[in-house]
Image 1: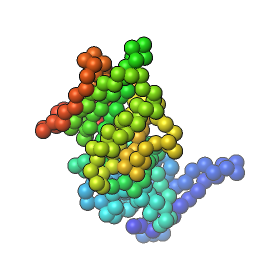
Image 2 (image 1 turned 180 degrees about the vertical axis):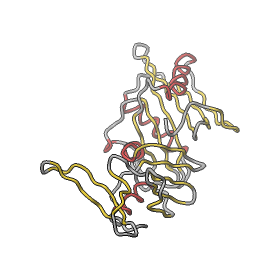
Image 3 (image 1 turned 60 degrees about the vertical axis):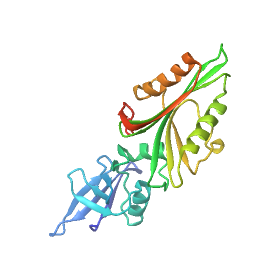
Image 4 (image 1 turned 90 degrees about the vertical axis):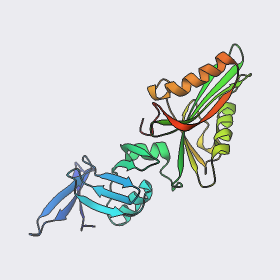
Length: 241
C-alpha cells in the first residue's frame, strides 16, 4: 500500500471533510480520494482491490469480507467508506458501503450465502394467509414456494413460519439473506440470527412482483406447492435490486 496522509478540513470550528494524499517523487502532495469522491472496493474470487475514481489501486488483499477489509484499512490509517462491487459466481452486488451494511449486516458471514425473497398476503375477512417464497441467485430463480394457511396469521407468526422454513433449507456453513415484504420483529426477537439475515423490502417494489404472485396464487387455489428447478429459470430477482 502507498504511504497515505489524511488531510482534514474544518469550517467555522466544525469538521467539514477529509482527503487522502500521497507524495509525488518531488515531495509535493497528490490527492487520491476525498469524502465526496469515495474509492471503489472490488471483490472477486481472488480477493479485493481498492481503487480511486481514477482507477489507481491503493489497496489489495485476499479477504472477501467488505466490513473486515474496511476495518483493516482503518487500522492502517486509511479511513474510507468505499463503494462496494462484488463479482463472484454466487453474488453480483453494486452498492454503497452504508447500504451494504444496512442490507447484509456486514458481519463475518460464511462464504456460501443463499438468497431468498418472501411475501406475506392476508385475506383477513376470510381468515386466510398465504406465503410466497423464492430462492434466487443473480437473476435466476432456483426454487419457489406458494403456501396456504387456513388462518389469519399475525406478523410475528408469519415471520416465524418463513424463518423456520428457510432455516430447514440451509446446509451446514450456509447463511441465508432474505428480502422480506412484511413488518419484521425487532432484532432481539428474530430467529436463527447466526444463520440468516432479514431485510425489509417494500411490497410494491417491482423486484417483489414474482414472489407476490406466488402468495396470491396460494390464496386462489387454497393449497400449497413448492418446486426446485433442475435448471434455474430467468427471473427479475437479483441481489442488487
